[in-house]
Amino acid sequence: MRPTERAGTDARAAVVCGLGAWLPPTVVTNDDLARRLDTSDEWIRTRTGIRARHVASPGMPTSHLAAEAGARALESAGVHDVDMVVLATTTPDRPCPATAPVVATRLGLTGRPAFDVSAVCTGFLYALATGAGMITSGAVETVLVVGSEVYSTILDPADRSSSVIFGDGAGAVVLRAGHRSEDGAVGRSELGSDGSLADLITVRAGGSEQRSSGAPALPADRYFSMWGKEVFAHAVTRMAEATRAALAGAGWHAADLDRLIGHQANVRILHALGEYLDIPRERLVIHLDQIGNTAAASIPLALAYAQSTGELAPGARVALTAFGGGATWGATTLTWPALKTV
Ligand code: ACO
Image 1 (tube, helix red, strand yellow):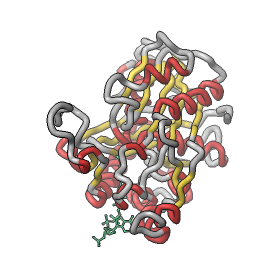
Image 2 (image 1 turned 120 degrees about the horizontal axis):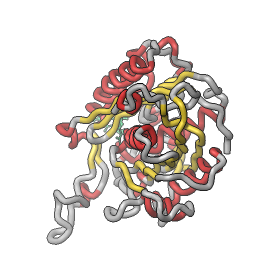
Image 3 (image 1 turned 135 degrees about the vertical axis):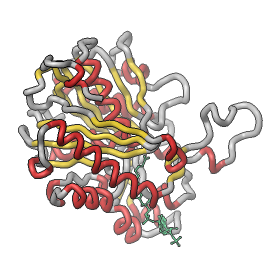
Image 4 (image 1 turned 30 degrees about the horizontal axis):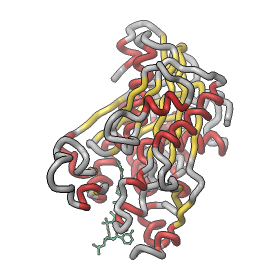
């Protein structure tokens, strides 16, 4: 999707003007997991870079995390209202209806259009492109874009290969109409998908493929599964290609980038991505050590983390990229704006 191109000579753009994040308070360390699974802190750290993750308490749905992050993003932007809410999630509160209207109502935005976007770990970039496109088309002036996940609800607690990787959390940005020359203007979005890879990252049951009447789904089909090694290889190549295309769209070279914010799945993937793109490690934002892979929430959570540490200063040139189930992938660029930290 190329919003600025579609707008022709129109310089209207979607500009990031608010940022918020929220993590559930319960922290589960690698040692905590090693007490109930055949794993170790050493294996998890060396294979993934993850040390701990936050986990939502039972009964705390995705909408709760999303509303907490969304409220902080609205406060950061200094607004109480937006024209639209877009929520990226793999773990909606219910299969039907969408979760975004619940989030909008919790934020006092009843009546506003609100819908979910499902692109697994690339979900936030798809939602950002959707919100930005709605603004550049002139349909709306402001959008709240949220990524929120409670992955702990779809993981098999006995599966050491997935239980150690994921964490729960939410992050959000507010977009407003502005000019493409402004700091915070969202650049061209390079998005892609390949449905032949649908089995690589999946929860088989709960959709139309398996009927809800009749025999109950096999336990394994109710849980998340991932072919880790295959995903690893696709993730690096697709994120590298998408980032290169997004940089070209911005007229930047990799050497111009101050920070690359890749989907926080595995530190080895991020290091490999940096090597592919010739971006030194000190310019990679690494947040997964503290929170694990938070899927659609990982990019906005990494943005909030990097802003809080001062890694993202106003004027910094930033690329965002992700790969996830579907398979889906994407990348975009922006120059970091001055934002109020909440
Ligand atoms: N503790 C100890 N041993 C383990 C664990 C664990 N938690 N998990 C797996 N192992 C074992 C395996 O059983 C295997 O043992 P074996 O050799 O005796 O069979 C061995 O460790 C190696 O397993 P691999 O799966 O080959 O390990 P790998 O080095 O590939 O790491 C991982 C697995 C972390 C999942 C990695 O492949 C990865 O990060 N993949 C990419 C994930 C990703 O990018 N996801 C992005 C999208 S996610 C989304 O969209 C939701």
